[in-house]
Image 1 (tube, one colour):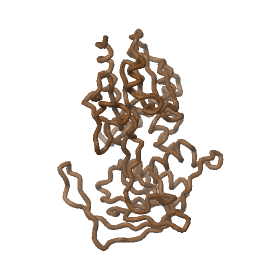
Image 2 (cartoon, rainbow, N blue to C red):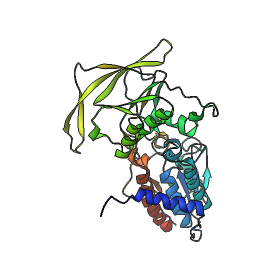
Image 3 (cartoon, rainbow, N blue to C red):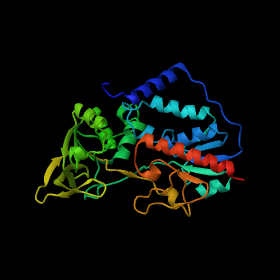
Image 4 (cartoon, rainbow, N blue to C red):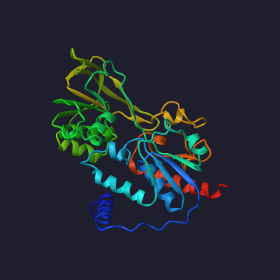
Length: 356
């Protein structure tokens, strides 16, 4: 009858009300005697752990970082998702009875075959997509050129924005260029603006092709972000000390849509131009860290992108091993990772119930 209902804001209101007014833990089933290892305390892992522990299984989460939450903690800025909310969710899962082991990198301290051999009846892999993708342009290894992962981890997780109160340095100059057009690029841009920089977004397609949510780009532009569409990096140049000082870019032109309807791009000959820059942040995508795939014989994964191959409920090529979230799909949204966790938990419960 009018403006669309803001479901997300209604959900946030309810979640905030429950957090402020106290909540009752849901009932749990009788213990089944089955043990499950969950790799990664991000959205998918926390969802799987919460669902399975309520069904009576014994759950242990193995998290590589020193804090739970995964991308919710290291990748999403405080102004978009306060860390107090993330900490509350992690604490809730622990109150349900889930054990959380921090600083525990599966693939190094122990492997999935070792977990299965040492008493775990099933494993869920929710280790995310934390390996950055780079442009491959010359000069990309200069000082002052960050991957989005490193930049956001320094700023968000290690509190670089509060330096020197927190002793995590981050060198960010007056002119910042963020390369990319997704939600992560917008987070990098808005963090840089808050650190006092003039920020330009460089995206090789047009505004209509931006993968970021419309709300994100609108908010960023309201905060002074300048956008240069149909442009891509060619080469980075540094000063005598090895720090970036400028970059060469080229204009791009859209081509006909592919089979999925996505417009391609091609460089426009002779359209190169220069930009003076102090900092460059590359936010063009992430892929899964390959350590689990390399240390787990028989675990099938995509040879190009490194994502673990799963069926519609998250089952991998190995019996009793499931996966979901960014490690299976590539970088996506928090809610899609949680949905994958819900589906996997249901399938894992059925598997554990039938396992002798």
